[in-house]
Image (cartoon, rainbow, N blue to C red; front, side, top):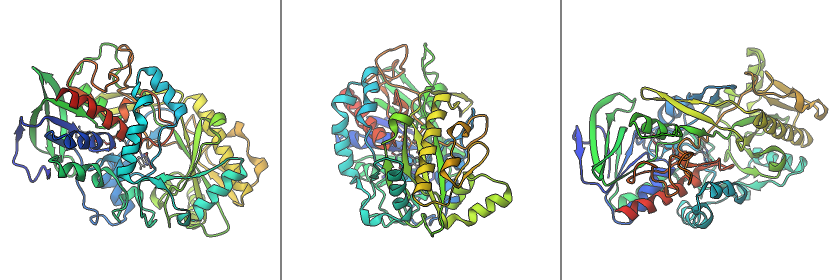
Length: 497
Ligand SMILES: Cc1cc2nc3c(=O)[nH]c(=O)nc-3n(C[C@H](O)[C@H](O)[C@H](O)COP(=O)(O)OP(=O)(O)OC[C@H]3O[C@@H](n4cnc5c(N)ncnc54)[C@H](O)[C@@H]3O)c2cc1C
């Protein structure tokens, strides 16, 4: 049953569930599914709304306002300021993400295992197997490659790499190109199309417009208090639910916020620390031919070949016009000229495995993320950007455009000079769609506020299951690993119930 703040009788007070899960993104929904499948009574609370698939059409600006946190305008303060994209709707960011479904590579799992997460060695692949089956993950079919995808393959090979087809959780996708406005064709297997409907068949109850503001363990029960809100966030009433266990899955910015607001003990000051972003730069190729990259799957290819020298993965991507315009340099006249070349553009992203982290603090009920791009990370991104630029020019692009060093336009390979490319000191555009860390899990109590079984260090009955538990970045798109965290937390919850 899916209820919302208009359809339940309020104030809503309930003491009957075995488990309350807060947040319906990949971590929370996967956990809710596993616990509900075991026959337990589960409530899933989601602050955002459940929008029907036909409600919004394919309107980019509309989707930003309705499905994204803060209309897509949340930013981490620092140098450079980094926009951090997040979902706020049923399904969390899985509803508006690009449907890339990658396992964390073995090379990145080692640090997790060293932090004390033995399950990253023993169980992670089992979790991934099950999740991939439910999400029907597979590579982009070759016949679905559009010109942007083909240019990516050509450019990566021309730069000396071995690109691969992206793996995605959207079987039968028709390539309408609007993944980030919410799939209008029901093909993306986001959590509202997979874990949640499966959970509903097993008695799961979902509450939308239910924003938790406090979680406290007392006398063997956990009390969740919060506001019932309308679609725009205005409070209508309140709720108070108590359960035997609670799982917090509000994402990497909002899970620490809820713990701060609940005055959760943190003697070593570790909640909010270890904030990773996968800082990401965008490289545009301008071509004589018509590319029409918006017509087709936006993310079709993936290249890990340059990781040793850059610490980055390079992926093909194509943005819709509103977001493209934000990432292009130039005076109004130059910007206009570039936007007029939209149909002739190719786009790649360079996504860095952070070597340093930032932190989250808060004021009242708002999280404030701080993140400075570290010099090492800037150097890696610059190398990745230069590789893309070389590959693009070698494979026929007429020009390469990057919002770095105040605005770069290369027409010949010999113009590329890594020493003159910079993103720090306000000179370039870096964004993040992968906030991670902030309630990191691990063995050492002085360093990790969450235990390896994903229960909170100072509470037996409160668990955390989302990207906030990552002690180090995944290095690749993190959705599948957030779901795996949900599976792992469910084991801890079921052991108590
Ligand atoms: C535009 C975009 C594209 C992306 N593309 C990809 C991709 O292709 N592949 C990939 O692997 N990853 C991708 N990601 C990242 C991926 O979607 C996220 O890493 C993942 O969704 C994080 O899962 P999560 O469970 O940690 O949190 P989220 O998905 O952020 O879900 C948290 C949920 O909790 C809710 N919530 C927060 N606070 C409260 C509260 N107090 N009470 C109730 N509910 C609350 C939020 O509204 C939200 O719905 C993308 C992200 C974005 C934004």
